[in-house]
Length: 434
Ligand code: S3P
Image (tube, rainbow, N blue to C red; front, side):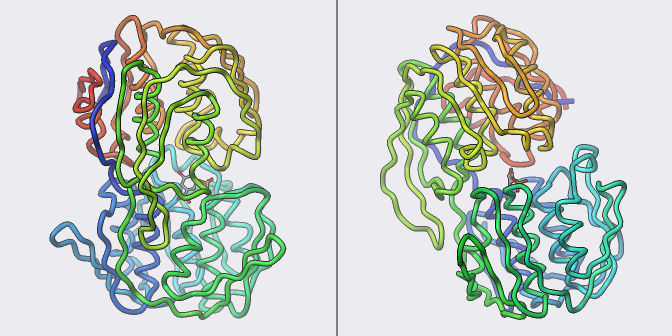
């Protein structure tokens, strides 16, 4: 098992880029595979999660090549996938499993999606049930993977209100809707990331919007295209945290995606007093990007309400570590979804903070964190969760003794090269184990 060891102190400085956006990278491959013609991708995230999507699409008969740092996908069309010879292993990736489940529901063959122990514990009824209303039959182990998808050539169109705001579910149903006979309409109880809609429109598919409903017409052809993937704001967030919590830090992260359905971490850190400047805003294809300049700042506690959670869904670990070093209390509400991420993130954050000397009151869908001046040293168990490992690694900058992060291997699922980049910018981080 691999671990991070962080020696306390240091500050972050420099001008860096983070790897490509994970959500967008998955979608470039999947939409490229469903398109007609060729899709060329630059800035693709070469992480194990995105690799799982690539390998699955190749097993479904899609030709994908890498040359000179670019990926080329030869589109198979809306229903051009072929039955795979074996189960498709999505590793640790909920995004890959849920979105591909929607794609496979509209392919006329049987296929099986499986994953690692964490993914096989995550709830899949949220895609199984609406896809069943469209006519696909999906067998599961009590709502969890492995999922065996009995796809249908012509799905029924769907009108569906999602019980939770989820970009993975929305994307699965939109892509199933491409193989439905008529309009599919979806409505969410909150805003989730809109990368799929933006990319579908760039591929030539009209997305209709009326009274909070999002509609798509089955049979709309997608046209392959060239795509550049922006830097991942969720990866930049660890560096934003590190630079914010340490006085005298000054860090610039270039070319980061700042899609407003994802940028809650910037809003909330600023609300806590963080000094984050956004400059050089521009469009990269259908996504907005900018450079972020972060300086160390004194923070104060805030109240994070339920409607703000989906906009920062993957950055709650970062925000709670910032909260632990803020003056006063920070309260998080309406974050029950974090219990079903790569780990039970509410529990993992609370346990990690307590191990570092922080007072935390935890409840079913949130927590109260009382700020302190510095973390004690100690051991934090990441529970194999990449975002828990990277967020707690940054805590070392403001600790009084070394911090050991147990089980850091899954950092590779979203951020290959994290440890090296963190060291280059000033974090005293060693890796041990295999
Ligand atoms: C993602 C959506 C979010 C997010 C995940 C990536 C996506 O999950 O937490 O890391 O790429 O669609 P939910 O859809 O479950 O909220």
